[in-house]
Amino acid sequence: MPEQPSSARGAATHRRIVDAATQEFARYGIAGARIERIIAAARTNKAQLYGYFGNKEQLFDAIFFASLERIIDVAPIDAGDLADWAVRLYDEYLARPDLIRLATWARLERRPSGHLVAEHERYDDHKLGAIAEAQAAGRIRQGDPFDVMAVVIAMSMAWSPVSNVYAATATEPQEVHGQRRDLLRDCVRRAVAPEPAASAAP
Image 1 (cartoon, rainbow, N blue to C red):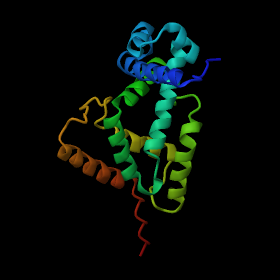
Image 2: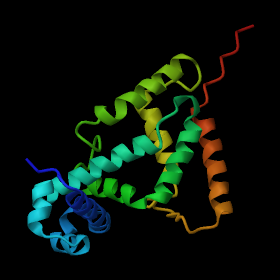
Image 3: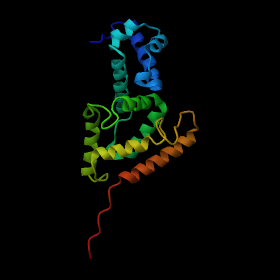
Image 4: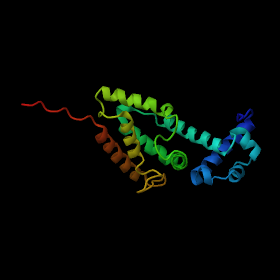
C-alpha cells in the first residue's frame, strides 16, 4: 500500500509530485505521461514517487479522483438553481482547465462508454437525489435525473477545453465571459424549466 508523507518535507514533496503529475497527465494522458518528466519537475526521485503513489496508474487515479472531489467542493450542486450551478462549473473550467483534460483522458484511455468512473454513485447520488427532490417539488422539468444532470453539465462545458467549437481561457476579457455566463444561465433555465400545465379541455 502506498505510504503517506509523515513530515513537512515529505508533504511538500508529495504536493510537488501531484502538481507536476497533474500537468503531465493533463497534457499527455496516461499512456503518454512519463515518470521521468514528473520526477524532474517535482525535484524528487522514482523511489519517492512510487513510495507515495505505487505506480503510474495509481498516481493518475489519485490525481483524477482528487479532481472530481475538487469540482464537487468548489461547485456543489444547487438543484433549485441549476443555471447558477452551470455557471459555477464554467468558472471552474476556466480556473482549472487541467481538471477537464484529466477527465477527457480518462474517457479516451479508460472508459470510452458508459459512466466515466466505476463507482459513479459516490459522485452522482447526492446530485441525482437533489434533482429528484426539485422535480418532485415542481421546480424543474420531469425526466431521468441523470439525464437532466448530463444535459446541464454538457451545456456548462460548451466553451471548456474539450469543446469541439471553441475553448475559452481565463485571459479573455471579462465582458466576454460575462456574456457567456448570461447566455448559459438563460439557456439552462429554459432547458430545465418545468413544463407548463396542460390546459383543461373545454
